Every structure is written in C-alpha cells, then in structure tokens.
View 1 (tube, one colour):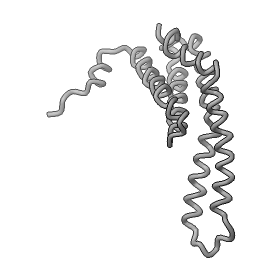
View 2 (cartoon, helix red, strand yellow):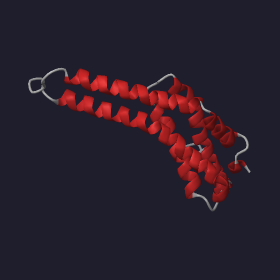
View 3 (spheres, rainbow, N blue to C red):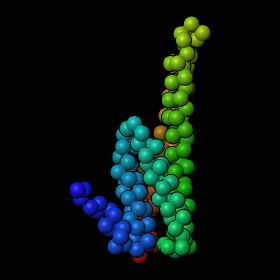
View 4 (cartoon, rainbow, N blue to C red):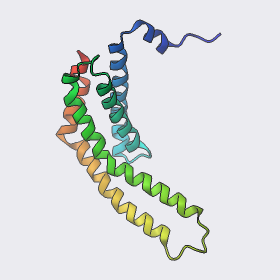
Length: 158
C-alpha cells in the first residue's frame, strides 16, 4: 500500500489561496536557488531561473481574484522584467544548441570552411553580452527590491 501523499493531504486541508501562495513561494525559492548558479554560468541555470520567474508571474496573474490582483500587479511587472532580462541569454543558448545539432547531422563533405567554429564564435560573443546583461540585472537594486518584495514585505504574504 502506498503511503499518503503529503501534498495531496495538504491540498485537502488548504484553501485555494494557500495553495496559490505555496506554489508562488516554490517559484520564489527556485529563483533564489538558481541565482548563484546563473552567476557561475552553470548549464541550464538561466533557463530554470527564467522559468521560475515566468511561473510565479503566471500564477499571480491567473489567480488574481484569490490573491488580490491590484496588490500583486507591481510584482508581476517586476517578474516580467526579470524574465525579459534573461531572454537574450536563453535565446542564444537555444539557438547555439540547435545549430550545433544541425551541423553535427550534416555529413562533412558538403560543409565548406570552418562553419562550426564561426557559429560557436558568433554565439560565444553574443552569449557573453547576454551574460553581462543578466549579471547587471542580478547585481542591480531593482532585482534586490524584487527579492525583498517576494520574500518579506510582499502583498502575497498577507
């Protein structure tokens, strides 16, 4: 016999508001967990942090009647900003991975010149600029205020 699922038990005893706040809280924890990984340029960290920001924002928007949309609107705007700051870095990662996979699938004979090296060189420069944008955002006051609002004085905590 399977033991009961703690999340299901909690859900049965919780209000919809509590469940939404729990979910948003999990996304906030993910943002904080991935922050140092993004700073160290760990694989997939930009993607995961961006996903967490977008999920938190989506939950706040989708459940506006439950958690007072007018009070959380500023948080949504800031989460949108954060995800956008990560957009160029994530797009570059995805494009480089796709092009690299496509180049690997092409037989070597029709490939003329150092295509792989040029592709990598182009995206290395682009990803470097995008990484600087991300780090600038993470080092800025706007991000610190967002974290503060999400973890301490946020209207979603009331």
